[in-house]
Amino acid sequence: MLNKAKTLKGYKLNSLEGEIGKVKEFYFDDKHWTIRYLVADTGSWLQDRQVLISPYAMSGVNKEEENININLTKNQIEDSPSVESDKPVSRQFEEAYNGYYGWPAYWGAPCMGAVYPNIEIDPIKLKEDPQVDEDWDPNLRSTYDVTGDDIQAADGEIGHIKDFIIDDETMTIRYLIIDTGNWWPGKKVLISPKWIERVSGVESKVFVNLLRESIKNSPEYTDESMLNRDYEIGLHKHYNRQGYWGD
Image (spheres, rainbow, N blue to C red):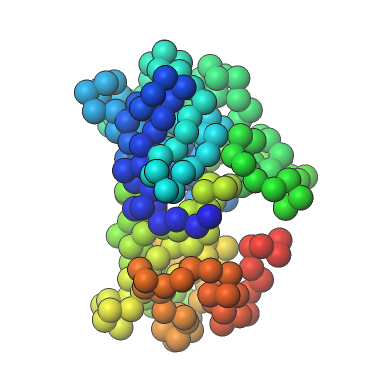
């Protein structure tokens, strides 16, 4: 199911021993645009550190009850490797973190671009990626920090990132919600990460290989829009791009 990141923020995180907090934000890599960690707001518990939850630990997302179930105990989370709240997530931390839980490193695992083993999905839809990026150094970014970054089309700026749309079955970011208010007041559009050429943290910009006029004329997205497959087909048809469901 597709959900906005801002919708998932605030969902309760239920461990094997009860609630541990709520979703605060997400870390994703800017190569595969896949969520690698949920950041938990644990209130007064473990408040001096970032509490990260890997999708490897997720057993399901319940939209009706607005919660995410986690297959971990409170002691497991408390004893896991610690990363300070004001420090970035390093490869060294990730190796220690995954080693502590006995999980494979996502940068060296088949299907690591999108799929986590504990999330309920239809195995028929999965195709194993033969490429294993053992030498890939993930560049993790937080949804909080990237929100507001400018979108640079092939012929100029076009807007800024307003939110993200996440597939909660694979924890893949399917779309960026772009606010074009400075050019076409009141209009929001969707852009797939597959159409992104590069991300510049220094410039706070995301570069897409699309023309401004094409983006301007793309199907409008609103909070009331029915983000269903028909809408997605129309969006990809507008850009003459193949949909991710056909990969």
